[in-house]
Length: 210
Image (tube, rainbow, N blue to C red):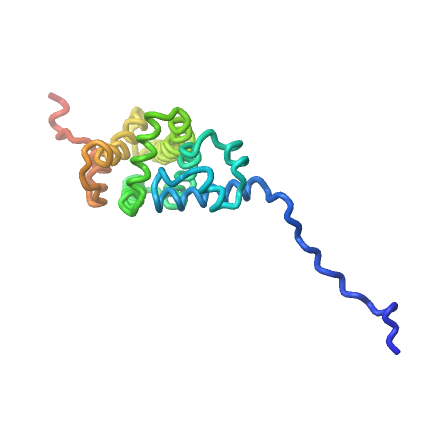
């Protein structure tokens, strides 16, 4: 007869409780859900109720972490766009600017143009959205561009006295101007011309001495 008392017992696999998820995990899921709703349906679809349903987070958590749905949308936009808009550094500043700006134009024309227009429009009326857009997207993206240009400057590819902020304004500002003000088609074919204009200027070499 088998002595069950002396038979080794396989320990039961502990069951994971329904305890709190790590805050970083919840935040990432909220941002991912918000990004999907924002890019798929537009800013008006981003409400705390909808995002709570989509992400599994509580509304109380959303109200605690973000001052408004628009502020949440602005941060989610940066989280969604960051992997797409990575800034390369191959050592060739022209090539890298063309690659990054082309990725930016493709991102906009691939479905992000409408949400971007809505977010920038909302930022003019809602201080929370304005702050979130500047701090979560515009300034971090600008700093990435400045660092890449600064690297080129240190390598001697750009003049020591060149204004890096002006170059950023010339390149990305031109895209936003066409998208938001002129309302004309934004085509990636314009990117090399924008980059060459910013890097090499418009004046003839012999005209600057006059």
